[in-house]
Length: 221
Image (cartoon, rainbow, N blue to C red; front, top):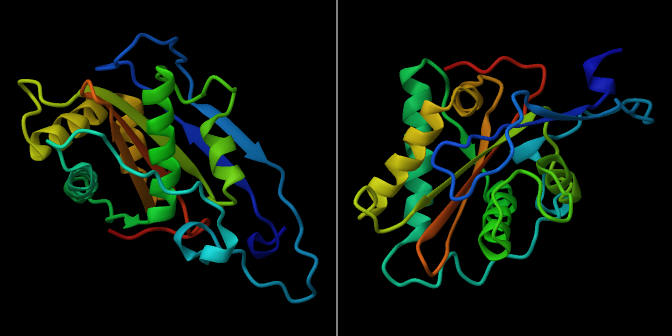
């Protein structure tokens, strides 16, 4: 069937235990959630819009958090921007194109980071059983394919005295994990949302969501 007449959502979630704040079970295989293709009923259907191509009216993200931390010694928004730039630099060094940053996808990611910090868990699946795929689908954020990277470290340690150092240690954790690194370098991933929450005791949770907003198309570097 013509790609323009069908839509499919395949979301791949990946988890690394390196540098985790707490020990969780390991699954050697990526978690995959898929939705059966659905035919467009219109006689002359328009191609479905994915990811950052969607209008705000099509996406129902969680309400913004009042703050990204209660601490006054760190600029979390700066860390998020630095981490996004470092991921783009890493992709460039591996001949992969830069990513489009979507604040709506970042909000989905940030809420998961906040949830992990406040309910004291570290996993793609929250205590209510909701997965990465569930969170994205609940927001009506459409991905032709996507993935989620998680990383847990501490702010204001010997390795994370500045926002630059914190962003770097987050990136290094992703690079050193084969699953995370593969997700960061997928050419099909063209959209990113970085959401970080830092608890009062310095626990830092980083969730990075990736999305394919142009399914079926090759992304040039």
